[in-house]
Image (cartoon, rainbow, N blue to C red; front, side, top):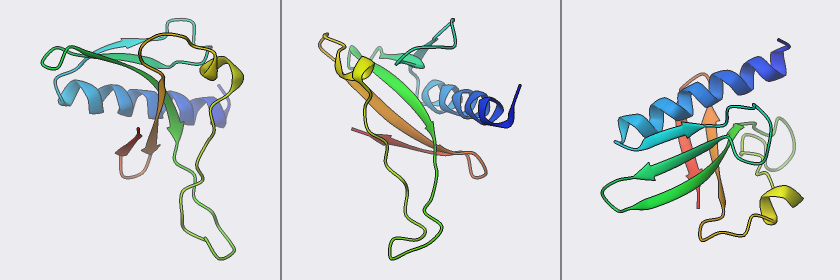
Length: 102
């Protein structure tokens, strides 16, 4: 496994822990490919979320140095036609901090 895939795998494990610690049911993408990494279900609010886990990358130079590089939804994510659209969960691998972009 190359370092890019290893980082992604570690971030998905951190994301899974983040949601299970909040009491959510978590379903993982078994193929490892596709526009959605996790599906979460909140039994209290009866809410389903489709999650794309992203390694949190920071800008290294320029006026915005130190700020997160935001990602945009790809064509496959934009084409999902159900009640809930895909949300990005940014994961900081070193601090294990997770930020859900609504």
